[in-house]
Image (cartoon, rainbow, N blue to C red; front, side):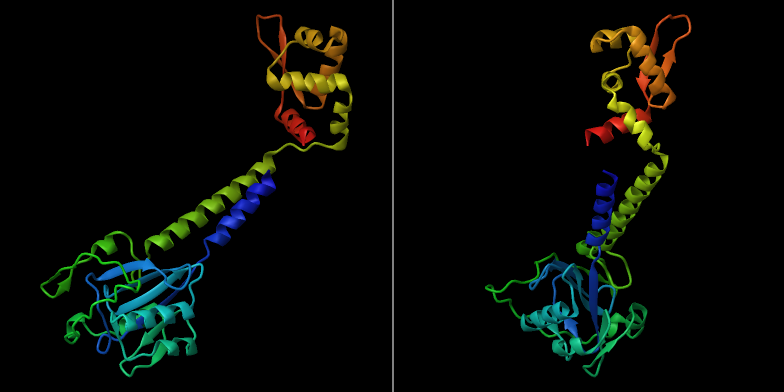
Length: 287
């Protein structure tokens, strides 16, 4: 059972592993055409999620999930360009020539690798963006990003969209998917730690102790005590053995730490019960 829990915990941690690739775009040369600041949808070419948006700047396209890759990111960017949702001088096919999980399309139309902080530092204030081209209607036969409510712009500052509030990941921040992954990994560590501590507190049973149950009377006593605590007279009646024989076997089991006596002051009856070690031995014998 312990090994099964350990394997499940390990499998859980492996299943939480997820890659993420992000492309940032120069605000002086690229523009994303959406009715909301940030949107998310399922990937068109594999088992991953796509996040696109402009808040906080610069505008970005990101893929994350078990099948996320730089090729998947390139395919999604190419899809957005063909759908007239993204205008950029950078060719999506050039992504595969640059190593890294975060890349930046500069003003010259070239892809360069960068870290998140470097990508954000490259950008001028959002107000410097030129007037975007007019949107082109989507082809209804092609899948597209979900239509979301329009975000507001007030006093030159963007107001966060409903998608931000719902947990869409932002450049430089942590999204809902990453939070869930961290929570799952934390729970897996707790389960594994519990199993390790549990194994340290389980009593050890040697071969000599196991052989005690080769005697059918002692084995019968253990089985009877597994359901309820009993006195020697009850055990004698159940097993069809003399009380003296039952008491002798109970003494052997008590010395081995498999059974313990329960004596109540003022009462003449002495009950016997299984110990943790005794229950563990019964479970082992049951397979």
